[in-house]
Image (cartoon, rainbow over all chains, first blue to last red; front, side, top):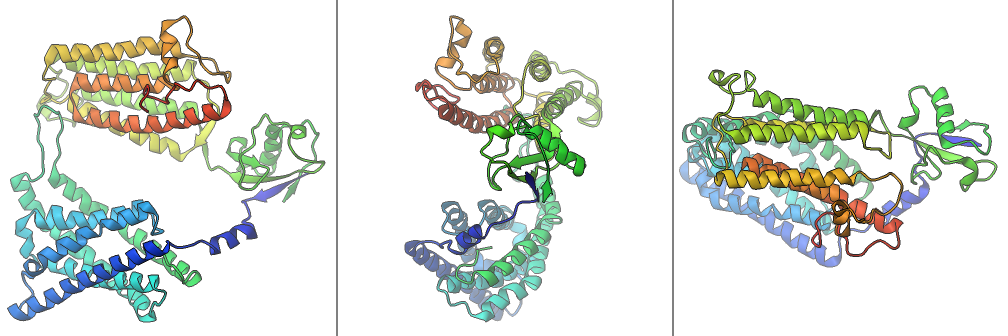
Length: 244
Length: 282
């Protein structure tokens, strides 16, 4: 009698099964195309808004106020993407997508919106620009992929610009949180102190510091890993690349 | 590919030992031997001639990763909260402001909470040592880090607030604490009668009133666990304790549902009235 060597061997059967995996149905695809087109348009609006404001003012300071509303609207709208993963029309992990979208929403609402004093900081422009360019490329990438007509230029742009946009975005975000710290500490924003009848406390200032620290080990590895996996996948299955 | 020559009445356990000899880094508990690459692991007690194999049999091996015994994990998991809570209770230095070091709380509910919490974990430790019998001897090593982080982390979080110099006792004072204590104690008395045998039989309620819970619930141990943490939440009126209770409840419900499903699969005449964890509800 014999025992097999360590490690299991993938049979040919499972490979065939994988190739035959279907994407979302026709209705879901139509919805996703509309969603991605709308998001592309939205971020284009923000981009145009930034440029116009810059030209009108003659300087790049304080441009946040000109695009505040569309930024909030479209960035918050991205929460739908978590739903897409949960429902299954997008083959991405709910946890990963959730984490990424929530961190953006957190920065938009819990930091930039909540701490008025940082809204005039240049770091805000830094991350808003990074987000805008990234999202325009990303959403148009998905739109074209869904329609099975992905121009090489967009795919190239997505993987190349990432190397500049990602550090730009992270720097902007970190600097903004850092700028918010003294105001949070002074006003005790979103913080609960003892004593209280629920015997609970929360220090938003410490929480923000911990958030800043969490940027360090987590994102680069995760993002480059995810992108690398995607590149490999995109080469193998050109019909329906994964979202992230 | 390795070849072994064995008797037809050899067990999987013996094969694992042979494999271990040729591959010393894969001790038997780390090996998963199965007939099909994607199938279920075979048990150590399985005998070759009772398996669907001919004169030659092909097995697949899978490395389960570094293993640690359940007993070790449980002992570590439960000793942590016990010790950690007491450290906060006695206000060991560097936790609260220096002027509070080694002082004691003026609220009697804090002392009561300490007794209940400590008793709970001492009981669990004793159960692990003398009562429980586990179906698998070991679990993957990384579980101990995950589990300890959970138990120790929550224990520290709860203990910090309950034993804090600025702790606020329950609003309804005496009555609230007494009700909570009753909940807590009742659960202990009821669960003392739950230690059932390992034989795979459906537990049925007997003349003993303490077993009547089996009429309604598949996993009364989880029901009682929930009861005692609810009691503790009420007693301390502390939000972190409530969080812990909710998280624990979610986890236990998942486990209870799993157990309930496996009972239903195994016993065709399983009482239909029973729910996994909460009577009639969940």
